[in-house]
Length: 289
Ligand SMILES: CC(C)(COP(=O)(O)OP(=O)(O)OC[C@H]1O[C@@H](n2cnc3c(N)ncnc32)[C@H](O)[C@@H]1OP(=O)(O)O)[C@@H](O)C(=O)NCCC(=O)NCCS
Image (cartoon, rainbow, N blue to C red):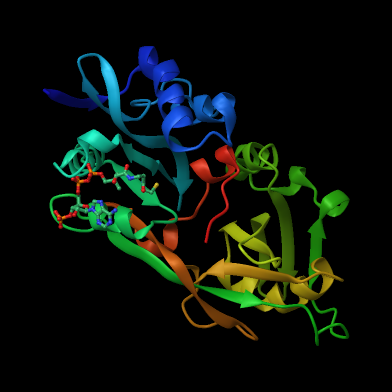
């Protein structure tokens, strides 16, 4: 077996979608996997993933979901990594590590992994791949106890007005509302925060309203307890946001350890600037831990 590792190009998209669908997970359907190999928001991405190929046949792959963002007024390139899979006969000889290392070597790109299983950590963290822990905990707020305050203004659903978003955020919000995320604005005495929440059950019946994006952590912290009360009524539900967004523990928050950590590799950005948008998670409708 002579196995070659290389970037996937447009001509690989169909075979790659079939590879993930047939070997890794059928639930997202071929259409879901095609979106991973050819994401809807990027006309000509740097690549369509990374593959290991034996005699023309894909035997291993990793998803690379690229995006371009504006962070603190600068254009930044991001890439969400995921869906790492190597066919059984090819395991144990360094293919996953080769794929992960080669595909994340561009220092102009910030790479992000959202929910790493132990076997993924074993591939990503040691040299030469060198991913670092982006976060290992989230803050959570349950509804209850704040109903009387009404100190903050909250806009979601019909009360969310996308025309009031700062212009670089309009496309970002439209892209993620199209993927079923919930847009929220909240205003406290300190200002306004725009957030995108992903609403999903985890293993338990608890419904998580998880902030995949927020643009002002101080204001989010001011408003979170009241937001939980007003948005999460009558449900076993939790509002959550990753810890790295906050300089200090926000008011009334509890801390929950992530069962599976987040990872990053960046020569350009600090953890607090790295959110969870433009990833395979909503494209595949994945549950995260
Ligand atoms: C996980 C997987 C991609 C590893 O592929 P691979 O080509 O065999 O991995 P490598 O040979 O490059 O091994 C890299 C490191 O990971 C470790 N590793 C591999 N599989 C492992 C597992 N199941 N549990 C723990 N560590 C594992 C190896 O021991 C090696 O570490 P070492 O050099 O310190 O010994 C492959 O087993 C697979 O496709 N599994 C099923 C899908 C999956 O679990 N994907 C990850 C979640 S999305």
